[in-house]
Amino acid sequence: MNSHELFSKMEGPCLAEGSCEGAAFLHPFTRKVLPNGLTVYVKEVHETPIVAVYFWARTGSANEPEEINGIAHFFEHMFFKGTEKRGVGEMDRAIKALGGHNNAFTAMETTAYYVVVPSEHFATAFDILYDAMGHSVFDPEEIEKERQVVVEEIRRRDDSPEDRLITVFLNTIFEGTPYARPVLGTVESLNRIDREAFVRTLHDFYVPNNVTVVVVGDVRTDPVLARIGQTTQAWEPNSSVPDRCASISFVPQTTVRTREMEMDVHQLYWMMGFPNMGRLDLLDMYVLDVASTILGGGRSSRLYRRLVEQEGLVTSVHAWVLSLTRAGIFAVEAHFPIEHRARVEKIVFEEIERMKRETVCSGELERAKTMLITDFAYSNETDADLGETIGHYATIAAVEEAVTYPDRIRAVTEEDVRKAFERYCDFGAYTLCAIKPNGS
Image (cartoon, helix red, strand yellow):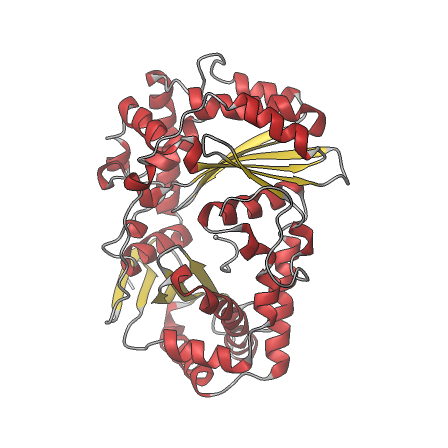
């Protein structure tokens, strides 16, 4: 997980300032802000007759009241469950009849809904999404049906050692902030969500000045903008949206935090992470992407070579970065037999300490940069991929950051990596969580 994954009014073709040598596949694109505040991005891609249409809302689990934690994700489930003019299931059937598919996903800071269809059906696909965005009915009977679906999803999360570990880890490292809440919520908080809560969420966050539309595919920009403008002209903004967004003040821990629990598993699921300020220290996040790749990004990484290839202590190991708007994490995760724990932890600390003291060799650095830039390119192969990247960055920051991502990675030096480990990897201030076999 790298920082580009897990994010001024302009019109006309929009390119990043400075070098455009970076993510050439992302530009050109057009950005337009409509009179009601709706931001629209259109990128023409004419290789195949397909179009991806996204609606991105600047809200997620971090914006929820704690007592109804999980409503952003629950709302996503209700999105295609009927509107004033389309009954339950009609939207799914209509999209399938067009030869397309639809889906949605929720994160801490964003929620996205999308449709991918043959490009000749762009107008219909957009109308279906817009209808769901503004006119969902939230039928009480459907709410109860979908509540059980989400409850089962929560149970599957809690039964999975990997999912339970990350949930506990985030809750611990982000303690006292909205980032600590699980995206799915809990069974208890889910049971407090009623129809009125959905209507409030729709009114509070699903308004044009808090939404970004992204269209990528075999379309023409001007007709697309005209259609969107005409269709959404009656959609009214809400000027109080910024006041409803969570005010997050994250203070990184200054002590070691640990949490361990037992499950019916046969090995240890282990995660250790160091907190940082995320996108508030944006330039350092590029450096941490490179640093995590050298330390634990794939078979050529230091931890993989030592823990897997040389000593055979772990079944898997990787390092990752999470960059949120006001907080972040640099973490290492591993799975291994519990009797190897002391040795594994010793090696992880040794390798981190080594990267604090010594600059990495140029070969390691260039290999990590190449991996990150290549992975970024591969993650933007399809129209839907491009729509996700543009929408994510547009919602949390600016698309220009995605365009310049490869150039920012190329600019990282050996000394940058060493200084990042020195600054962020404090052995007196980290979080460590583990899932252990029962009875261990």
